[in-house]
Image (cartoon, rainbow, N blue to C red):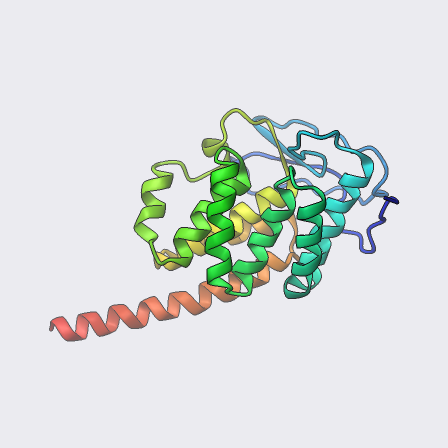
Length: 236
C-alpha cells in the first residue's frame, strides 16, 4: 500500500500541549505530515497526532491515513463514512477509524447505526477514549441521559476518565469535547455545554465539531426551554 499524503493542512499540525487548568492551548506553525512529531508534555497531559493505539506497528502510512480520515470528516462527515468503513476494515485492530465513524453517525443523526457502533466499540475497547465515547453516544441516542450521569459519576474531564494516560490523539480530545458538550446541552445545562465548545475552539477555531456543537446547543437549549415553559404552565 503506497503512502497517502494529506490534501489539506491544519494550523495545528504540530502537537498541542494541554492542561485542564488552562483554557488556552498552544498553537504551533504547520509542518509537513511526514515529519516526525513529538508530544511535549505539559503539567498533566499532552495532545499530538502520533498517539495511536494498535497491536500492529504504527507505520508512517497508518499515521498518514489517520490524518487523511480526520480531514475527510472535517470536510464532509456524510461523505467520509464510506472511506472510514474501508479504513476500519483495513486496520481492524485500530479503533481510531471507527471512532471517527461514530462522530459521523452522531453528526448525521444516524441513531440506529450510532447505537450499534457505540455499543460495539465499548464492548471491544471499554478502557479507551472511543470505547467510552461509544457508550456515552449510544446512551444519548437512546435518550438515556441519566445513565450517562451514572456512567460518568464525578469524572467530567478526560484526565479523570483516563488517569493513566499522559498523551492523547488530537481527534480523541476534540471528539470527547464534542460528545460532552452535546450531553450537557441535552441536560439543558447550556453554560457547561458551552465550556466544551470553548475547549474545541481553543484547539481549532475552524473545527467542524465547533460548528456542529454550536448548532446542537442552540437547537436543544431552545427545546428544553420550551418544555420547561409547558411543564410550568400545566402545573399552574
